[in-house]
Length: 358
Image (cartoon, rainbow, N blue to C red):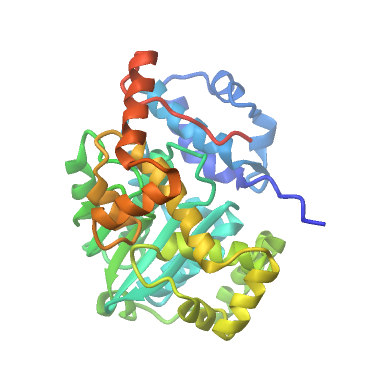
């Protein structure tokens, strides 16, 4: 019998900066959160959990309510390590920027489940990734921009005020104010990518800034492990573990049986057998993920086939076009045409938002 899927959740403490800002703008917080099935009682304990889908929805709604499309970015500029609880403190104690990001990737589930994060090397650079697992939770621009900008703010607060990454990637389409993102990150910003990413130079990221308090770090790591509980990578099915890695690596590094098996400390044949026992294969999982990504990106305004092809790990638009036709029996332009038809029928401008629900 399969396991009952758990509701993906977020700690109440994550909402604190957002709700404080809404209140500071003169809005009635109780009325606002009640629209999304959240009560003050739920928020009184920072360790209590709320459905992740409601948080994503609330963040997007707050940006609309306050008429501030850059809400997530602005909130991120005020973030301090303590605002992220024990995970923020652990980040601040890290000896290097790379170690801090690796700990964020390892312990993100202590703050919110249903979230994929990892750190890996590509062509001598380090790539930190962040992505909400459920593709139905869309749009999620505010969460993505808040998270990546908050991480940049933490680095500048804990390591170097002058820090800047090499490049920043976002899943969503370009905003109306792309110059603001470039000013905040001090780096080129790419959109419509397969995942949200911060790319760093290896030498800069691995530079040692301090000697850490090993005893305190151990205490914090044990506490975070307790909060994560059975949400760890090892508790997932092999299919879920491979899905997570596909979503993080696609378009950045090769997604092969050999590479994934080595990461999981097993042979390629063993990994292939484990996936077969669960009724799937690496090829099937990669195709499934590409179909989901293509569906999301083709519904975005001004989507370009060549850009989508690159984010899905294809060599060019022609290869993607053929693959999409094989999946759907029609070219990608058909999906874009359907999107325009829906917009024309509803009279909207394509900025409607769909939530993941609870």
